[in-house]
Length: 312
Image (cartoon, rainbow, N blue to C red):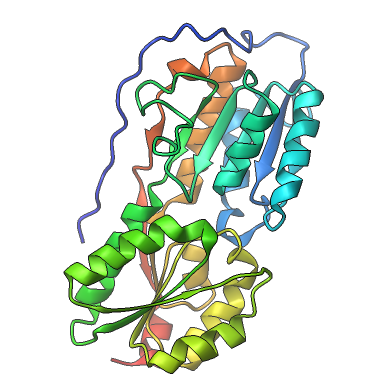
């Protein structure tokens, strides 16, 4: 299978004033981590990679760097409170990781503190958080994962893998609406019967959701990417295997826990790129000088044991 490589555009210099100076001996830098919890299974491997990359660049947590964690993946109002707390404590930079609400809260708290995003469930250009990939134009930059495009590719992979099957169900929620729309467009193009089930009111009742889902007798399942699905990985995987329902996921953690297949970003590689942004900004670079990058490394994994259990 040919991997699609996305290449970010070249950057230009902006007049936005520098918010950080070059690394100073004896100074401790402070960054705030806002968004998906570092121990959330889908990004658990990303956070150690992030810290390791910062260490390689001279910023060592506990020595000349302090990372303040504010992870509230299920409470939107808490994002705003935590972002305000970080801004008032004069952090040097805010990491807005995962769902769109993280960058919304960070921008509401400050228009000057540099913000580094991992845009997992939204388009930062379409939502006007940056002017363009090449010219962010403000205090926001970072990595854009293009999850909607990945959702479309996941539908294609399912169709290629199970060409005789036509009924495709999808689990999604408000945070994965863009992926749902992209997947539906592809499903229509491929003449698949698209059966969507939107989950609401987290924490989700996964058992009840699958009971409703299976009323449509689906032959395949696509699980969209949402930070609110993270706490339910084991339940979702268990239901798909028990029902012998071929399922596609976006993160490798689902496959490692028994899910059939995944196609998505290499989280560790993305978080190393985030660390590069952080190091450059702490060393004096302006966010507007740093083009937003699109994810370039993707993983396709299949759990052979599950494939055998599910059957053709």
